[in-house]
Structure formats: C-alpha cells, structure tokens
Image 1 (tube, rainbow, N blue to C red):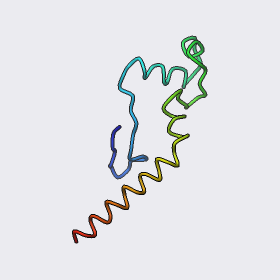
Image 2: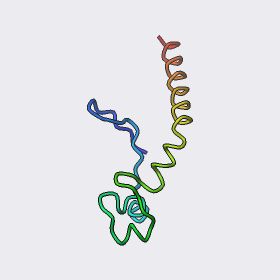
Image 3: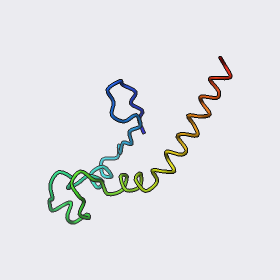
Image 4: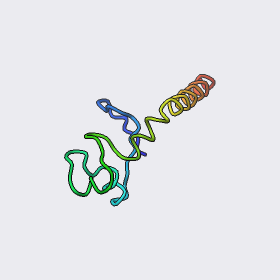
Length: 81
C-alpha cells in the first residue's frame, strides 16, 4: 500500500503489487487478449483478476473503517487544540 498525497492525485491510497509474477498474473491481458492471459483466466479490459474484485466487494467495509479512523483522528486533534 502506498499513500499519494500530492495535490493532483486522483486517489490517496494506492494498492501496489510488487511481486513480479503476481503482477503478471494480476494484469496479463488487460490491454489486449493474448495466449498467456487466455490460459490464466480471461480478464476484461482495464480490470484485474484478484485485487480489483477483492477491493470492490469489500468497499463499503473499507469506507466505514476509514470514516471511523478519520473521526477518531479528528477527535484527537480537537482535544489537543
């Protein structure tokens, strides 16, 4: 996981696959279908095999936990002011 806090960043939290073999499995065939991607498991253009579906299925829980953490941080800051 990486945090991108630049002003022009589209997303703040980036999930990055750094293992080369896992990254190939995750993304092979996103741009165009090929023999490798067909043998692994077809993937729709622009999609991933594991990380994307896992994040989208857990999205509401992730957002709920993030809101909780942000609220707690806000309370901590308010106490310190």
